[in-house]
Length: 332
Image (tube, rainbow, N blue to C red; front, side, top):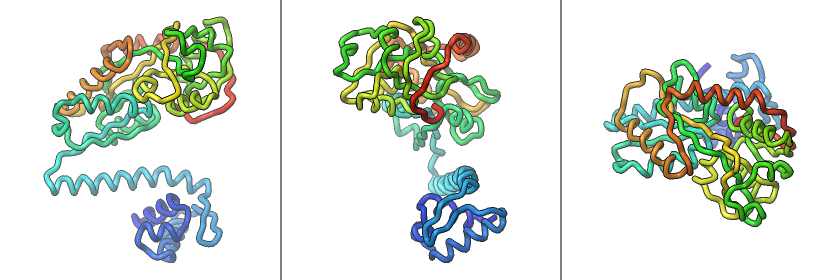
């Protein structure tokens, strides 16, 4: 299995045709076809169903692409790092965060660092919470910012933040006139919420159950920004983590406090025993400062509180009832 074969395969997957892949790689269409065919012969199955120059990935092709893309990305990072070493540049600080935290919190934290140049280059990626943990543990990222739970061997939790979830409503909604929205008033409405049952979602289910067993109709999504856009389109109201709601304001919708405390918990993590770096310490402190400035009622917990917070989350999950989604998204 050669690097050229993997690059040809990834280019065809990305562009959707052998001809376009050739243009992308600076190679002829026959050369790209030959490389892909050689790869297929070596692994023993077809990666594409062919129809002239256009191709459709097989199921096996999609599965293999996940690992090939990861490997090629790692190789590109090695090439970039080699160039940086040649030029005497410091290693970039690689940060991975959930979509909400990457959009709503991390930029504000970076803006608070007085000497931004001292940080050097920054690489910020967004990913699902489970992927954030994976990237930190395997060394693909230096620092992760993600929601709980974070109880993984080899992971060091530096601090845990807590802030109350909020209601997001169309600006014209009668409830938007209230400073604090009763959760019970939302039970008869269509709710846009998160898919992942092990993080924010189970707390919401538990609170609706406590409010009288009401089971609202749900539209599920894996992105708080998606939820806010659906609220603006008139598809319902949302109960969301507060970082996107406060950190990425959207015209046409308003954010209101709830009369029920549904905590959103998130933490800052690195790989255990990773060497201390002043730039990382500065970034972690800036994240805490930015969260305190952005989120009403923000509380900062020591990492030692993780077990107690998880136990409370487990109790919430145990008393939550099933919901009835009308639309499904990926894991949040």
